[in-house]
Image (cartoon, rainbow, N blue to C red; front, top):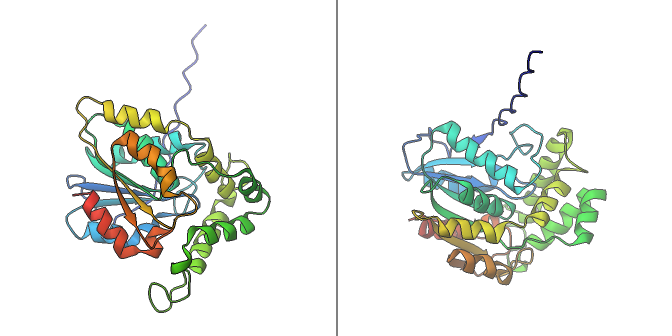
Length: 284
């Protein structure tokens, strides 16, 4: 009898990536920005534009099922890390710096550990912790009443000193902007197949279940010819991923830690200039 043909491996889902307002050049020093749970590439706009206009090639991604990238959302941090590496291969990038916020920081860590030796020049974990455990109560609310869960997370993500309307500039409202973005990403992801409950619950569950962080750090640091420079950027007022919770992974990576004194978990919104300065130091 003729042998049946092997089942083909599904092709990676194409990812949308914002290039900071400049044409992407794979030959230039590349910086990849990875967003957190229920966010998209837009949280990185300031940093992406600065690096794109100062000698870097930029890819600020929308993860599968988020923002402008089609679904379904991928099941875990490991699969999302593989999607980021597939994007680099697709764009012809030989060496890149990875910058991730919150859930994106775990994806950046995992991707750096899975990449070929020498392929990752820098790893920058922003607003991070390991393990990144999520309370059962918040997971339950995310599954049953995601809009209420969004309100809770927005409140806890912003430091009280940076919470008022018109901060950091006239017309700005950090809580409102963050809430609107998360609701928009949730609505766009509602049609994504293959996930339990909704995109909010899916993302927070992925953070909670990720257990490979220390092994990934060991893999990254033990690679014989790895010269990856590791940094953490944390908010001193962060109540979602406290600076203390970042100590274990910082030590495992031998990472330099930059602390933004007035910021909470939403560092990109609360202290955009401070974050950009810390990124510039980290990516020298």
